[in-house]
Length: 633
Image 1 (cartoon, rainbow, N blue to C red):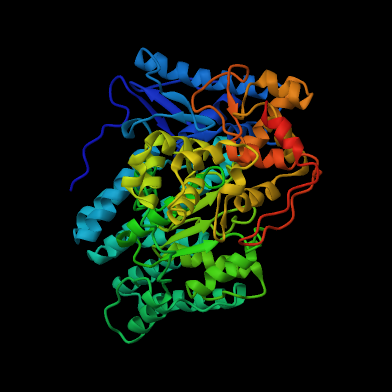
Image 2: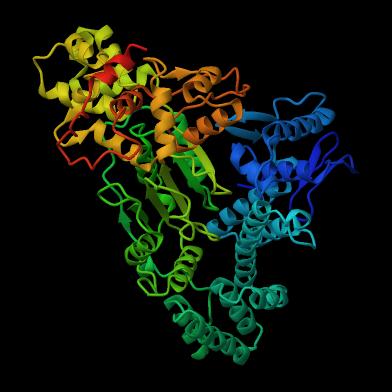
């Protein structure tokens, strides 16, 4: 299907450019973008168009050495200036910059931003190539490349580490498109068009195998066979010297074809180096999450690949959603779909090198298991750049454990699930899961206990799912328990869950325990965060609190309280409002079951509770009457 025509910067519209210095024009006139910090905020929002950018990420970009006391207010001023910029163009801001998922999202259309136009042309070019229309593919890919300026993207703001990282990702995406274009031109017999550019790029990126293969092919097609063979030999020696690796089987096959005088073609990714499928079974009881699932399928299944973080409190259904998406995306990832737990059985975080080794074994990556972590990481990144695979990293503890595992180039996608926000990871898409609505929770309960039983007492069923806080894990455990206890009236079980001193004791089914899952999240918290959470959980039976009540509970000033609450939001222990409100007007909440667990740990000390063995509940702490007093609010 041909790409719809778009006229970037057409009359009356603003056109932003990131593929060079940050700039904006309207009707051919440049728009002033303000002082440097304001341009940093705008560049960061534009680099993730139509995606929420956490406030913490914006703060780190603008103040890498540490934010001042007025950082939040200053950031609001810079965001307001961005709104004003669109207001001057549109006549109003048309909700261009909105507060969303604890950050800001800039709404922009394809004809208003060069990176969006670049991606659209690249997608259309690849689609044409997959249909076999290589001339159209080459033309569209060349149009995408022509959008790039003579200077590197965002070169005027690269002294900011966050902006520099995003610019490097843009350059990696450009290299992939250049490889697609060069291969299309070579396949249509126009190798000479790409020859000079390939030479320069290989010198700058000597380890990119696709670039080198395209250069070999273009030399071979233009009658320079000896030079083509020399390119391979140089590459083989470079890999052996720097990484201790050999060229891929596909690259070696290309060399042998040229050596034999046959017609060479571009090397296809070797299927025996793909990782197959290692996913958990898809849950037959998966319900709801239609909007979130559609977003994951759209973003992760895109032709360019993506990194998506699915975050939310323990038991909210992050893993189930990621696994369901991975199963539905089967056809789009021919080189495999891999699921990897990011924690050990005891809930502690796995080391990055440990996960890197397992990924290398699962995907048969050359160099996996080598004692030199840098070589193993380079081998993994090389594999990612040459394949189309989907990687699910489940229950990630922190950013450091997955840096180096995420693709820097190529067409692979990664789904990460985490309780915390992982705000330190940039250039990712974020999906924050909240507890489902009552209807979806009731549907899940009905699938476990039967619709007929659900209809016998719908009001009690509603009390059950609300006492579970709507969390799919807790609702599932309730359903499994009731499915065994067929004699137990729903109303009686609802009464048990309504009792704050007994609710967690009731949420156990065999070796599945909600308290055990909450304990794992509790161990992740620092001693300071645990202490703050206990105090906030004691404010009332519903777990809802305002900034003023939090200041009183924490015995802290406004600044210290905001930091403490936002630290808990970042861990997933506290939920924040979905819309944009001031700190004083916001209502925060500790999820009910976590609230109950925190109250159980009053008097235990600031350390985490001991490990919880499957099928066994931890002993109640001495003085367990304290939670009873707290539960009365």
